[in-house]
Structure formats: C-alpha cells, structure tokens
Length: 55
Image 1: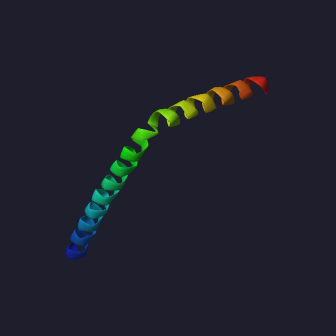
Image 2: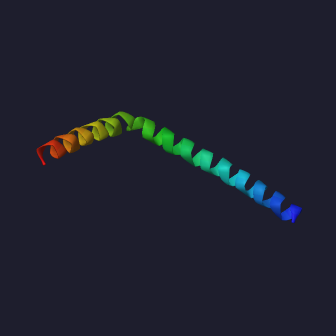
C-alpha cells in the first residue's frame, strides 16, 4: 500500500513538472502575441458590454 502511494506521489510530481514546462512554453509563446490577445479581449469585452446595453 505504501509503495503504491509513493509511486502515485512520484508520478504526480513528474506530471506537475511536465505541466510546468508546458505552461512555461505556452507563456513564452504567448508573450509574443500577448499585447494582441489583451487588446482583442479588451475590444471584445467593450463590444459585448455595448451589445448588452443595446439589448
């Protein structure tokens, strides 16, 4: 029982490391287009709020 628990924690730790690396890569990728994304989100929110006001 203890051995399998240890294996599980080791596996989850490995998964956490992988996820961290992946998310770091994603962040690096998005840093390039970060401003575009933020601008698009801002414009989208503006349009949505205007749309809601009209309805």
